[in-house]
Picture (cartoon, one colour):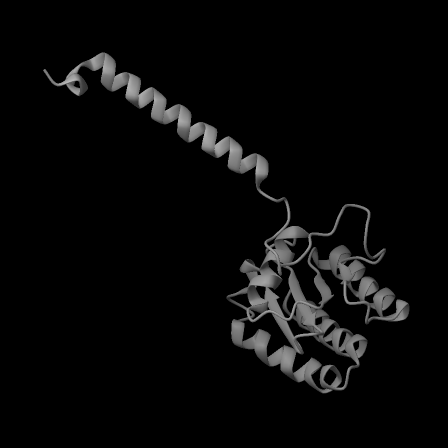
Length: 179
């Protein structure tokens, strides 16, 4: 007689499989890192980083004056329109800056009406991403065009603060015109 056809044996196997699946899930959850994968952004720790609103100069290329101006732009955008333009400098150097930007945006809890601009200093690249609620009004191509038009000249010359300020001011103007 086949022992697997007995209900007691079949139920015992199901219970053992469920216990193993739960144990694997608990083990993975306990050992999974709380930060993005290596090479990805390091999530800013609470209370650490810039004292300016949504400015993360992880590559240390912005002056205090630039950080203050960027923070002031965000303070005004948040108070008037409930949105912001987060600015991140990094030395990522990876090939997919979009994923890096998205992971960072999630790590700092950006909203659906916010923008994030990432300046990858060592990778000599930059990326602008709009929140999901903005996609119908500010397309991916608009992101490419704005980033190129307002950042390229200064970014290529190593004037990262000016590049970030030019783009942030242009986006603030766009927000003011479209909200």
